[in-house]
Length: 497
Image 1: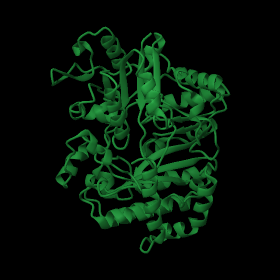
Image 2: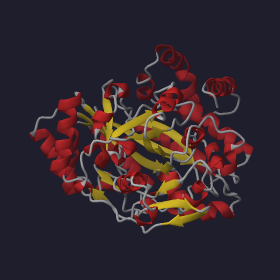
Image 3: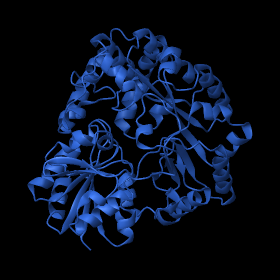
């Protein structure tokens, strides 16, 4: 069979996440089943990806696919796409959230030929078949493409029934390269899995409603089958469910947890998507069931400590719910809740950001197992409800693909990145970065899971100072902040950014 190349771009120069390239594996389902040779080149874990790509391009390639999120991963995708075009006239296809949201702007670049909009499981398969036979692209649903220098769009593709898709072809990658430290306190071979797509809620900052019109799920028996296969074949015991909202259907959740216990799978689980209101609706027996089945952590997007901002972003939850559920979790000493927060929303004040910091501190005080993953800087995603407000507050939307690279979420926010939050003055940005520096040492569990011996001990030395600053909102004179900026700058230089 002829070959297909898929590229997973690297993202932030500061963080190196070794998650499975699940999106690329997913669009390989039908092709792998038919025997196509698929090469996934992951820039995150492969420092020699250029030489590997050059070698692969010498084969009889049908196309090259690139996935891209907003931000730094666009940079890696652009570099790879240009490299492909410099070595031949192979079609370059982009997919993923960012090109799906801005397909026309993406296709204005000479090195990109086609965009797969939304889910690519079936679309990419049909597209490859069409390209292989050199047929017109207008019959492939769910794509945008260029023809005679004009950008064209095909009929939108209905969303797939997850239960009718072939199994993920894990065997086309080297699974041993994806060992990673779990969000839980132990170090295990953890892999990310997906058992549902979409979210029925409409938070104003989230792009999800524009990509997935409804929530769909794998049947409980198929979830159990997936977990069994991965455990038996690849000796996986720890799973990170990357579903945007796993807990939409509580009856389904209960059935899955009961089956895990009945089958004696003996696994560790963590969940990316748990809404606070869904958590508060759980009965004690349902919580017990979830934790008895092996749940050790879950992410809850609390977002802000400001009631006004919560209402503005239509989160549909309350601050009191957060405190109440956090106290309930103290009855489960082996469970580690992860709370996500953001700062820098349009119209947000410094006082409201301090409300968020104070909320974080109280949650940690009341439950020592709490892990505050970060205080992310709000980023206005195109085609979200809050995007229009962002423009009213001064945002000038980027007019090219490469301009979206400059988005930053954390300590590496610079002048170029702050253009996406023009309503924030330099004083706010500096205060935000100082707060962020202290957050990761405010919880002992955050420090304990640092794998690098030198970094962990250095963090332990700094921890008392960081905790004092965090709990008392003392972010004025911070010489350690100056040092951290130099380290961040050096890390970016060494990473080639």
